[in-house]
Image 1 (tube, helix red, strand yellow):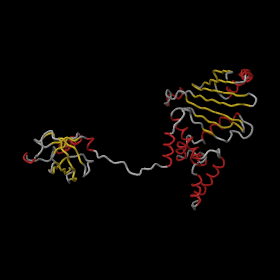
Image 2 (cartoon, rainbow, N blue to C red):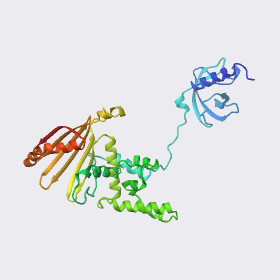
Image 3 (tube, helix red, strand yellow):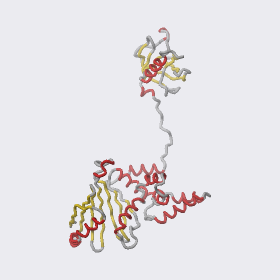
Image 4 (cartoon, rainbow, N blue to C red):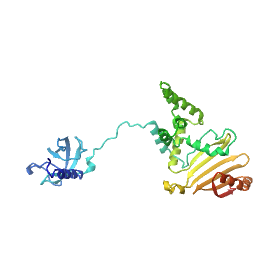
Length: 347
């Protein structure tokens, strides 16, 4: 059975070691060739069976209670605190840690190098624009499908690829949908070649699905893949910095469309309890054949919409005012509450 004070003794020694106070084994005063306050350099020679360390100080081999992470070969700077009743030293904790040299020939991966280049590249302060060549509608536009088309383009844009990967792993998103995003297609050619060499049916099926996704979602061929990925990463960084999301493409063939989406008060309404306080703002800019240049801004907060139209053409502005009642009826039929309707004619 251990002595009754053994636990107390062990705890005391442990605490003193954590405080940087080191005690040597009992030596006779004649054997101590040190003075109080003297700064000495100690070299750790090896770990002793009792858990302490053999340390060489001024040609004297001492038994010290150094920190457990001490390694043989380390050199420590100590200060003599006392000679009696026990030879005691102080150790600066910061000096006790070995200085590790940086590993040579460190090389970043291709993805990390690209991300570093994007983050360190000079910018003009403007928000990056997500560009897509495929129009929302191939034929005549369908207003009932516009929201779904825009949502689908965002889902396939790659801006939320990492979260979509997590959904795929948990079974909430099909692989076919994930393969439509740019990140999945970035190295598609190399991946296809490797998978085709495999005899596994699943690999062949995945390759076919990826090829189909590439054909269905072919982007602007004028933009090199590396440049397209840099633009995408830049926009992801912009979103993290609370800048607006900007999508630029075509509503239908030969009809350019610019769409912005932004959470105006993210700093004030960031928690789940403040979702109702969030103020979303979306903006559409387009030039129509008959109505001319037109901008639409819709703000949503507390379940209420604020609409603003700006038409460069005065006749278009008058037409929007005349059709106000009809437009409000369509909003009401969709369950949307419009509390403000404003039309302006400004350059």
